[in-house]
Picture (cartoon, rainbow, N blue to C red):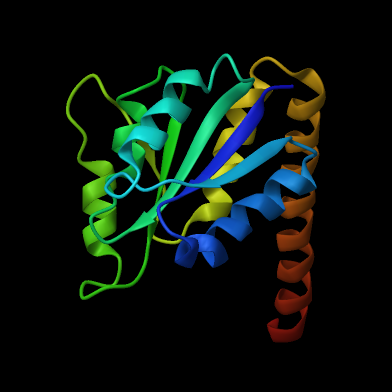
Length: 164
């Protein structure tokens, strides 16, 4: 199975990134975690991106706040799917990071999840990897079935309580 890279622009992004890491662990997806800044360590970020595919990665998750150029910088230097995770904080509460992440020029796509949406970023990475992995696809299907059963169980309990 291909690995997922979880890259943060700063170690202050770790609490958000850990949510993605938890999902990757839940599905048994191998991963590596790094801190590379698009602005403070651009050479290292570029080197990682350029070599990611040959180093066994299949998807790259990038968590960054404020200017949030990390996902775009990584995407500009590789052909792997990149998922941007805008991180809340700063004067605009994460809206700056969201817009910086989602507004990419044509030809350099970055899939973008909600502000602090690291779990969905990891689920998306799992779905991408599952295109070539039947076992992972079945784990995702089981996860979806279990989630539906949980909601329906709650529906039944609440419906019975308030049925007149």
